[in-house]
Length: 97
Figure 1 (cartoon, rainbow, N blue to C red):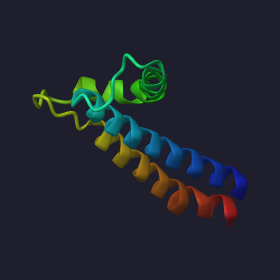
Figure 2 (figure 1 turned 60 degrees about the vertical axis):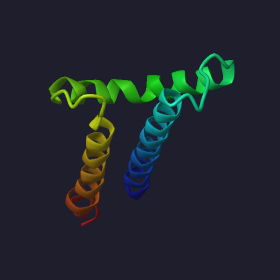
Figure 3 (figure 1 turned 30 degrees about the horizontal axis):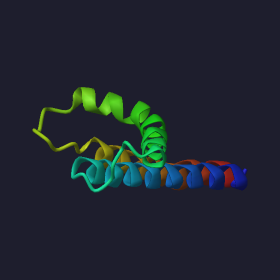
Figure 4 (figure 1 turned 45 degrees about the vertical axis):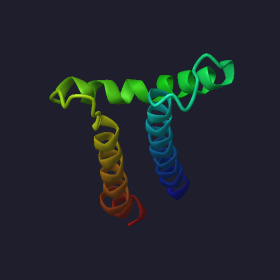
């Protein structure tokens, strides 16, 4: 059972990194540091969009319009860290004990 908890924890950690990379990638594209006409850059951006957007979209629906600032990835990261804490502090003692 420990292996399952460890795997879920690692997957949450990888998803947090994917969210951070997607946010940085989005900033670099919007400031024209990266050119999406390059096929490799476009492929990376498309991959990051496809794995992060399904989780971010519901949060964006409830967020007020803050102009050009999108804090939904930050909110999702906080929720994922809360899920990690819940996983290890609440569920792990029930399973291990």
